[in-house]
Length: 181
Image 1 (cartoon, one colour):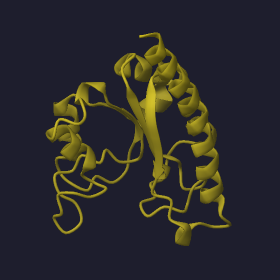
Image 2: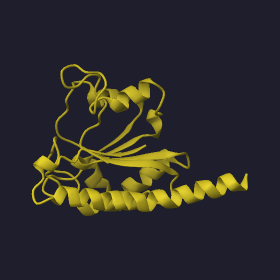
Image 3: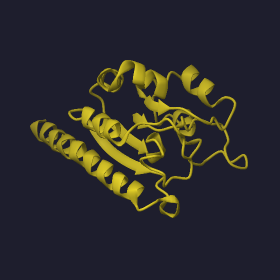
Image 4: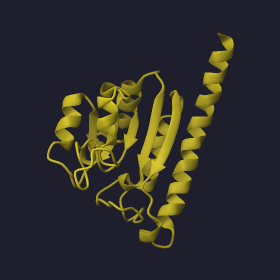
């Protein structure tokens, strides 16, 4: 899984000690055997940790976390290369939390964290997974009530378009491989 976000979403509990929600889903998916943590890269992680063990759990499980500081030190091309190496040629899910983008570009989210990706860096990350076996994608946590001039919604729609542009060819490739068998 390629996960672009400000938060790792690997808390044990979140918001009133609830075990199943938007801050715990990747931990639950790993525990339930739905995700291989060694095939997960999280890009842009920064800001508030909602649980003391959130990042510790992710690192101990084997998730590759690229903090925003490391992202800028490495550069977008090197991060893309590492993501491609981690997920390999196996089926891969692409998930993009809009708070991975700096709130100056995407204020319309419930958990804004300063110091994030630019909108262009977000585009480059998505375009960089083209050619991988992308089996699905999502873009989450757009909160229109917090949006100013609909800039977050507009950005989210454009990023989702970019995701569809890498998802469609992957679907065609999978279909061809299936027909060849």
